Image (cartoon, rainbow, N blue to C red; front, side, top):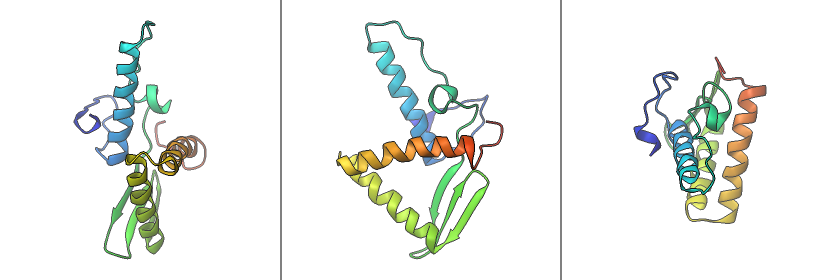
Length: 126
């Protein structure tokens, strides 16, 4: 669901992270529509990340032992980024297979990424 969203006010890049954030918003809004209570629908991105923009997060493989990891203005290249890429892929597969370890990892990672984006590695215009 998240890959096909267009939000003119945010004009964000289409990345895996923003697609996933969009999907979280869609699912929550579907739950709100389905519930017996009349809850207002959430808007993007404030309804999900509680900011005007989502953090710019990406990790791209550049070979077996190299990658580029970006978090807003911070960019890390090389072996450390490749290790992070492996960990992200491994834990995402665990989460998709409904492993408690994978689910817990990604709940914590989602929470921490938004906290870090508001405090340490701030998202521009957030």
